[in-house]
Length: 208
Image 1 (cartoon, rainbow, N blue to C red):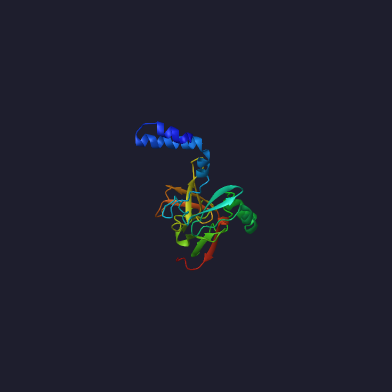
Image 2: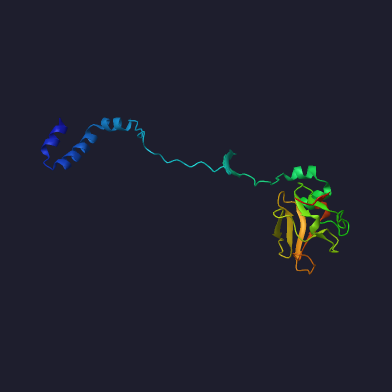
């Protein structure tokens, strides 16, 4: 009844009366507000909700130890092994040179004076690295090549910036260093100074 009295005594525009009436209703009859809040408001069936796009095939996400870890797929042809596995499959000397970037003594390498036709591959993963046609006698005490098989060898500057390290592009095994401008009569004027221990030679047809 009090609600009707208040509504009839107010002389305002229809829009203001409607707003004022709604406010009084909410104050006098709070049960109406509570009933409204209990309603379950479902979105329309045709409403386009925000969707997070799925990850591309090259990126997979996994949940580990409460964290989301992004795992990029390996590049084709790459050989990834934990160091414990490399230690198990390589000889101690191969592990020291290929994985720990060691160097064999000059003049002691198995392939230092070998000039037979064939292919020199990585001793760790057997990826072809050099053709015998690019091998030459540099007199440095290590096998020398003036060029590698395209895409098979990576070059990285040493931390001191004085030399360029060469590694197997497939497994990252240390091969040696490359030097340029030494004056050797070769097409590239480069000398890939490679540890014999880092290589595995297969005699025969050097064509790939």
